[in-house]
Image (cartoon, rainbow, N blue to C red):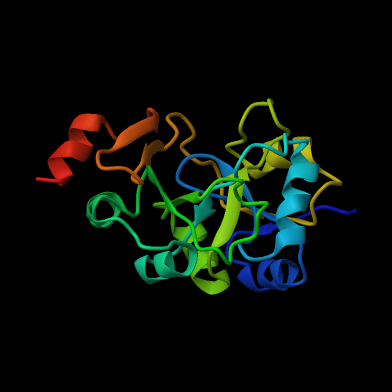
Length: 202
């Protein structure tokens, strides 16, 4: 497979690849992500193959706008709605009950991790494509890439397209918070603290 690099503004070729079950790497507000359409089971499975990713690890979903939350989540907790209105777009991932129509390759559990990234190029792609299953664009266990060149060095020949949006901030990953219970539970610490979250519920 030949891996092509195009400017991040070239959304149409990316959409065509996604609609035919392919994978696209693109910049986000943290690192470069590798994604497929969220409802394409075979494409999601190919993310695991491209990354040499352990199959038991769930893949988060990125969406481009709040209305898309209803497409991937069931009975969205009020807590998650409060967090989303306060921290999205931004570095907060909410774990919420998943839509049963989502492919099992997304998650083996009854929940799914969702966020809206705060990045112009990512939002443009997500708003055009709809919800996407996205994880970091690296070989599993290798450093997460912050440039298209770094993605290419790891995934050349494994994916068809990389959208080059320049350097991403890298650094601190998103906070992951489980919103499926009565109280928020942080599963991964990031730039949004528990104090920030609790303040958003008041």
